[in-house]
Length: 201
Image 1: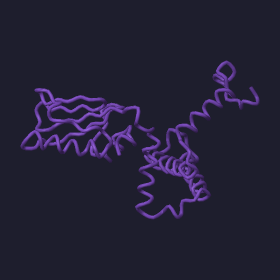
Image 2: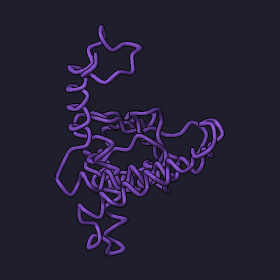
Image 3: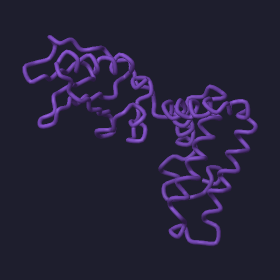
């Protein structure tokens, strides 16, 4: 549901029938029904299904607008629609969790988990990384096909996220922890503008 796996991109927002209004705000429109009560009912079904508090008719002001916590609902100025804006809140999990959840759904729909043991996921990750490297073979980096880079890089990320999920690892947590370790190995005053390994600094 949206509150658990809050997207950061339009592609992610499409899963919930909307789009991103800036990075931290989800937007979705609902067509107005014949009466106001039915319009609220449809919006409330969406809110409740996605972990948000429902709105009451008496909570709307005279302009048919409502704001509570991270949710705002308002009548579109010139279209027969209501606009629902939902800001990312403290309950929202990291984007990596959302991506992992989508990958798992895709995998499970095809009954592929049986093939996704840690060893084979590691092998697949290595193979996809090699395919990414192949795009740069015998050419300058600016000559590589950007669309193919996107495809191969997406495969690399997908297998990396699924491997992390196998060991119940939080991607955001382990990356930030590794950055903290690297900051100790590579202090700015010793490593700035230098490509040497920390043992040679």
